[in-house]
Image (tube, rainbow, N blue to C red; front, side, top):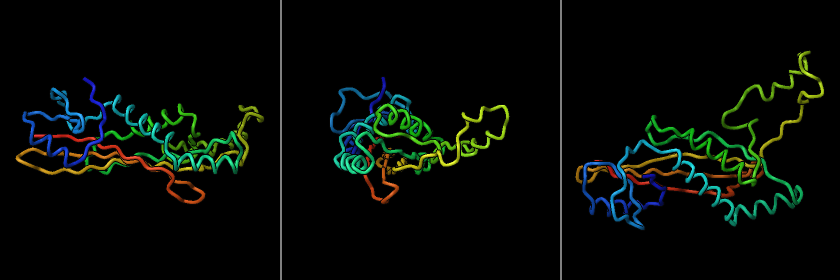
Length: 210
């Protein structure tokens, strides 16, 4: 059974712990408790489907964010009605202390969801997954194997208007021999020009482990 991301309060996780028993690690939705315990899994396991749900939910939140809508209105007023901001996506930071957590899935799926939203353009000239040769590709004009009119000229790379910083943090506590783990996914978008925070998003996933 695929386990959905759900917002979880730490106190609610405690309540679930007190009302559950069993030898396995489980996730719970404290606001809508399931009739049956969800399929057990390791706290280190975040599935690709969960990453997709998380990133899609984050991009959906951007679409309906009044602050981000306000930014887009200002941006289009300055750059034209059809202007689309360029976003630099930094590599997802793992602040959980768990080196086995594959946060690159978050970065990759954010790129996919953002591109599919048609809300922003994502730059590869800056930020995560930099290919150092992007800027140096202009030097290909010195290679006679390339047609000169197909080689990028100097000054053609576009700078970012926005920067998106994703990170994952976690906290844990032990109660009655069980470990409660809360993992928090945090995204922030700020404008490069002004340095102002334009949007923030937090999603939490709770685990109970004995």
